[in-house]
Image 1: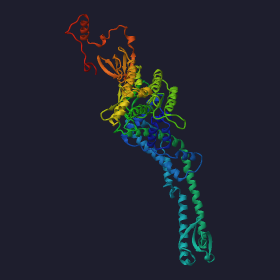
Image 2: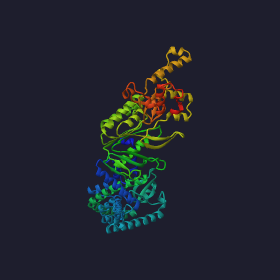
Image 3: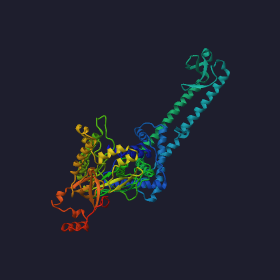
Image 4: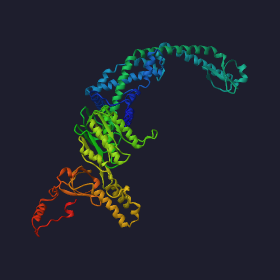
Amino acid sequence: MNNHYFALEFNTIIEKLKEHALSQNAKDALAALSPYLNEDMCVRKMAETTSAKKLLDMIGTPPLPIMDSLDETIALADAGGMLIPEQLERVARFAESCKRMAAYLSKGKATEEAVAMYGQSIESLAPLQTEIESCIQNNTLCDDASPNLRNIRRKKDHVETQIKEKLNHILKSRKQYLADGYITVRQGRHVLPVQRKFQAQFGGTVVEVSGKGSTVFMEPTAIEKHQAELTALYIEEDAEERRILYTLTAAVAEYAPMLRRNMEAMEILDVLFAKAKLSASMKAVPVEIGGARRLDIRKGRHPLLEADSCIPLDFEMDEETRSVIITGPNTGGKTVAVKTVGLLSLMAQCGLHIPCEAGSYIAMHDNYWCDIGDSQNISQNLSTFSGHMTNIISILEKASRDSLVLLDELGSGTDPAEGMGIAVAVLEELRQRGCMFLVTTHYAQVKTYAEQAGGVKSARMAFDRENLRPLYKLEMGMSGESCALHIAQRLGFAPHLLERAHQEVYGGPSKEDAPSPSAMKAPKSALVRTQTEKAVTDFSDKFRMGDSVTVLQTGELGIVYRSANEQGDVIVQIKGVKQAMKHNRIQLKVPAAELYPPDYDFSIIFDTVEHRKARHQMGRKFDPTVSISYSEDEFIK
């Protein structure tokens, strides 16, 4: 199994599949399950699972045999060994299961389901079953296994009765010599417990001595003849039993090819019905799968989550948009969404039903490559970031146009600026290769990349800001935000700490802008003025009037109306409406110098027609009745 499948928890799906299988060979086959790379084979395997599921729904659970150690039993018979009654009875039970399974599948022939046709490949083992069951019952050769065996056992019973009668007579007549009043068997011979001091007076053969030596177990002289006869009968019985067992073993060897063919058919059916049972337990459905480069998952659910509490996922990729970048808050379900897409795709390509709505489509892939979860490895001295990078480098070495790549929190675990750069570089490389990829991120620049790069679509996990509750719903075509400060505020984060955090993120001196020692000695007002002047210089140089900018959160385009003020607020006109935005919430797209001539009249863009007419009139002559006024509430949103 590809190690990347573990990140998707495909190994857990395999374990659930194995729980539904009966035979060990079927479990082994399921353990080796991997995506089919041939489209026809993949479609056929999906159809087989569907066919088995229909029979399961209509007729019930199939009477499949367990078949444990059956292959070793057949091999021993083939090698000329002797099968014991327990092994022979196992063969008989398998023959009975084959008969019942054939009858089960014959009921499904009317449905014309493909899996029902396997009934034609199950050969009848009735003669072998009858022969074994006529000789063996409850793992023992019965008296009627042969006339000779029946006669031997009757004689044996008669002799044993005579021996017990004589011993009971001795028990009563010579009890003064005995250590106890019972008959026992030692070393296959009937004996009485005699006091050692009376050994000579009792008469007979000592067979065994007690642990303390005070008692000897003796075979009285009166039963020696009968005991010899009984021993001979035991030898005859053993010889006859072995003859019968060898005969039955030879019959098993004769049927060995048919037994193996039936076993093979049963193992295939065991695998198919295990898939069908998994489908039933997950409330899954068959999906269309093929070579078209698209994904259409409708109301998909993660198969390892409780169906009643799992929020269904709608997800799409197509030929034009083969890449999706998901944003949103922590604990919002981004990782679950990525795993759901990857796991459902992988399951479908293995011929398994997936929990979703009918009409879904899954694209075939040559492999699945994942970087999900913490990649820290202490034994290899790898930090989280190093572990992620090692994994991503490996993915870039192997991923092809036909791969599905799944990356969770790409670029995390290091300096945000450098992590963002690495993330964009990796995404562009994957995009150039043309492979399908799904990525989660917090980086605003990566969101911008998703909105500008061809073939890439944004998506976000919905979040209830009022109740601080993730909605676990994927919204395609939209960008999300982490909501970290908002969540911290609602949870009771101290106001002065929240203000400091807000300054660090949205405007205000960073830690690198700490005042010098001389500035620290100055009055507080001077210190504030020094910091403010520096902040204004930094912000005012960032954007100029007329610059074309992109709003990182929404991807909308706007034009700078006013440079940043002391708080880092920039006035941007978007679709005719002027809005105040933090300087780090927008990104320069095209500077004004590249868009307009040096003497360009920006009032054409920013003023209304009425204001422009008024300004033109005021430029010609003084008119006390003409004025131009602006209200902050009138144009700043």
